[in-house]
Length: 95
Image (cartoon, rainbow, N blue to C red; front, side):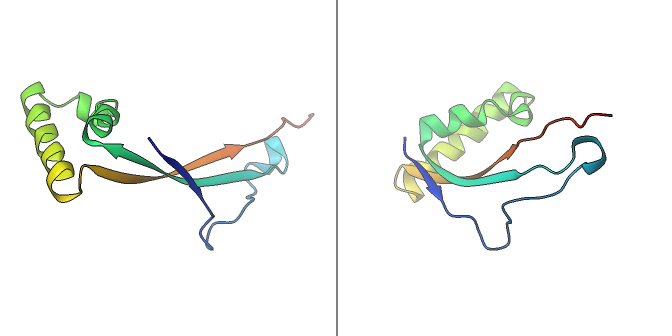
């Protein structure tokens, strides 16, 4: 698998101010990245999502077969999925 870190899009700032009364000011770091998957590894990820887990097993099997066929036939066996990870670094204020 390949993980590629990319720069932040221009509309995403490096810091935000959230809950200042409780935590004071603290930085929020945003990391935009992509992960490349083959059909097997992507289906393993999908199988961790509660919406997919809740599906009737026969429905989930048909869905995953369709996704596998798309990845293998229309996308050359590999896809890339974008992610946004947020890191909040805060310390509770003294009362």
